[in-house]
Image: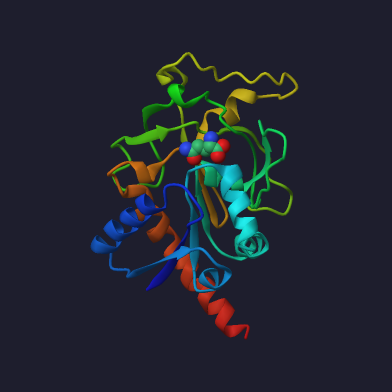
Length: 241
Ligand code: GLN
């Protein structure tokens, strides 16, 4: 049995909960879901999901709940999956933030740009092929709502390597969005901007919303892929006491 937290400050919390219940119903693992509102909730969790929503608001509410530092510590130790706004919070750096700034948790060596695909009316859905999912040849519907764009992926020397799980095909972008970055110094800007799902060590990052579909393969991936890891972490923590 594993315990998965969903950061419940704001955003698509209930939708992630529904998905985890669905996964729990057809996998051998019992999943206990904890909605994270206070620091005590976090200490029970083996892994965490940070939902989509509004990253600035979410960071602000986490700060008010005294969760910012505990979340940063959690990210340093245990698996975390960030979707959309959650992906922004897991980034090392972010662009497109208005005055007042944006607190990040870090953990994944990417730089993102908030609302990089445009405004609400430029939201879109595209079929994605995601490495590692059950039935990988069946497309997964990527729901992009004011989604962040990944501008840069640069793993630091001591970080685990980044594994790209899904890329967006430029031809499918419906609102004339471009995959070419404005930043000309970037040697291969197209590369990072097409990436919409990646994994680095313990962490998973998707710039779209798997929780807003009825397809639970991504959640299943998070649970099954990470079970060995969760088990390992538990053993390590237990034996280090
Ligand atoms: N644009 C939002 C942000 O910057 C993210 C949108 C989302 O999570 N759907 O936080």
